[in-house]
Each structure stands twice: as C-alpha cells, then as structure tokens.
Length: 335
Image 1: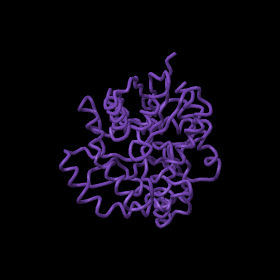
Image 2: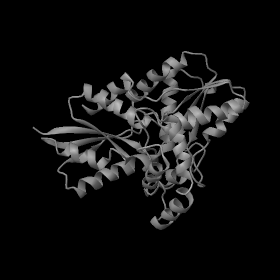
Image 3: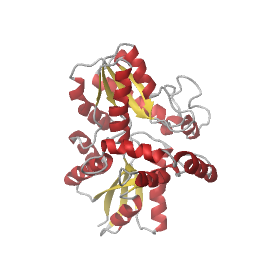
Image 4: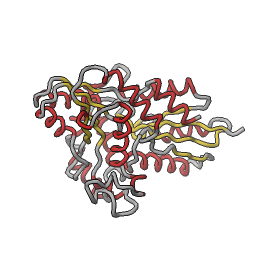
C-alpha cells in the first residue's frame, strides 16, 4: 500500500555562531537567485565584495547572543515541532532547512527511501508566499527529485496566511500576553524588497500601484506577500478583538540598499515611543518559529530602540513554535 510522508521545511541557520560558519551560511543564502534577484555575476560581486568581508562577524555576534545549549534556537525549536507532530501523526515526518543542515536533499532522499512511500507532502513553514521563501524551497525540492531520480510525487502545502486553523492557533498562543496590561501591539513581519512584490505580480499592473492595492481584489493576491501579511493581521485582530488604534503593522530585517516594504519596524518602534506608548507587545506573524529575527532583532535590538526612544517595556510574544494548538493544526493538515 502506497504511503505519504511529510517534510516540514524551515529557513535554516549556521551550524555554529562563529564567523566562518556564518560566512558559509550567508554565502549559500545570499547567492540564491530568489533572494538577491540579480544576474549571477552581479550577485556574486555584491555578496563577495560588499557582504562577506564584514557582515559574518556582525551576524556571528548576533547569533552568539541567542545561542543556547541546544544550539541554534531555530533548529532546536523546529526539532521540538517535528517531535510533537511525529508523536500525533500516523505518517513518517521529517524536517529540513533550505539553507544549512539538515538539508532538503538529505531529508528528501531519506524519506523517499522508506518502504512504500510514493508521495511527499512538502510543508514550507511560511504562512505567506514569497519567492525568497516558498518558491526557492519548492524549487530546491524539485531539483533534488530530478537529480536523484526519486520515484515520488511532491505535493506542496499552499501558504496558509488566512486559514482559520492557523489564525486560531496564533490567537490562542498570543492570548496570555494580551491578558496582561499593554498599550499597543506591533505586528512586525519579515520584510522583502518591493521589487520582489511587483515581480511576483502575474498581472504586472496591480501590486504597489496604488495605496489600497492590497484591499482591491486581484489575482495578484495569490502571490502577493504584502497582501497576505495584511490579511493575516486583519483576521487575527478580529479574533483577538483589537481596535484599530491598538495595533500597527511593520516590516523588519532590511538588507542592502533596495527599497523594501514599509513602514520599517525600527522606525515604527521609535514613532510609537514618541507617541507615548509605554508598554508594547510585539508579535511576528510571518515567522512560525523563533529565530535570529525575533530573539535578537526584536527582543534585544528592538527593545533597545524602543526604550531609548522613551518606551518603558517591549515584550516579544513567542512565535507558534510547538504550541499545542499549532501542532494539532499541522497534524490535521497533513493527515
């Protein structure tokens, strides 16, 4: 009897929080044509001449500030999720990273070698579609299948940004923090260059062409990261019962000189403090697993930015990680 296996896929992490390991990781990550969308030679020049000489040391210091006895938080927390899903699923379940280890190549080959497995349900752990996350992950899986002539069918779980189960799990995981006194909630999402948004627009004439483009129905929304992020927030604040004046949306993790989605998180943190917000909650819906971007960029750097601008406390609401409601949701989706 044929059987399906499941592969959960996250972004990845350096093997160690040192300059050499971070340099290898950044080289693999930034040379991905779906991440820096430029011709290979120009991409190689930018990465080799402008990024790799200095950024690995800075990033290594950032990783050191969040590294635990279990290693990279992203890897450790993803493994927790894997074990929780394995415990409740009747199917074989694996875990891979788009960059670093365990690789998509090794894990796909391992699952394909299991007796009777003829289909892999591929689960990119990103709620929102972007070429630099979902598409590159799927393309790597397709490459591996061809390169190793794996006799399996690849079925990809689509982005789940507005799925009621995902919204309910996110709301349930955040509820304990919202029951404490707070002034404002900031939904900080990973940013991407505006060019990535317009390039993914199949109509070529909708995304970022007007201030309300994300509210105007369009086929472009199926691949529009910004629309999907705003839709997640819209659904979530409805479930949480937040008024419009109680929350803001921003985009973090800007890299390079290209124009990225706005407003920027660091700018928004300063503005909120200047407006008199003292107790701030930050939730990062575009991440399902806590990582460098949440634990260091928000909880450490963001906290410093907010306090220096006049705020009193910034509290990071943890990502879904292996919250029971999220585990139950994943198991329902894959079974």
